[in-house]
Amino acid sequence: MFKTLGRFINLKTIILIAVYVFLKNEDKSITTYEIKEESMSPELLPEDYVVAVKISEPFNRGDIVVFENNEKSISVVKRVVGLPGETISATDGQLYINQNPIDDPWAKTLTDDFIECKIDENEIFVLGDERRLSTSDSRTLGPIDASQCLKVKYRYWPYQRIKSYE
Figure (cartoon, rainbow, N blue to C red):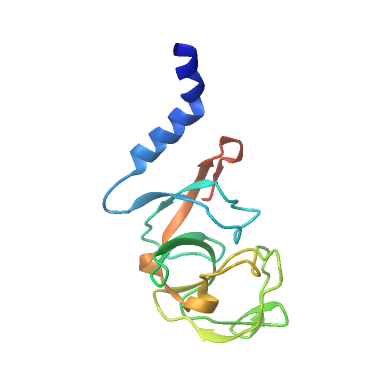
């Protein structure tokens, strides 16, 4: 009987349950999130689990955030590419900030063209790394309210891919 029970409960399962219970809270300042789509691959893959936290400092370009897509009532994970006060656009696969091309090391596919978008204070512009697979990003939703975003701090599962995003 104990051998059978031991097959179902192993160290990985115990760690996963402990992290989930520890980080489950009502005020949503810390949350766990399961990656469900491929729009952030290869950085985050489906069935990866991450810890995201509410931060007080401004986001930086390249940060990975989790936010709620209210139109679809789902949580979404994307990368910050545009910051407050900037104007962002894409032409011929190139991303532009304030009409200047930027180095975009996160893009794994070309960015489809989109018209200029002015990012107001307390907003950010987010895109997935796999731009052709990315849905529910700022190209369709517009800039995202930064106060509604949590910053991804750690990927904790699978344990072979543990990583800190500091």
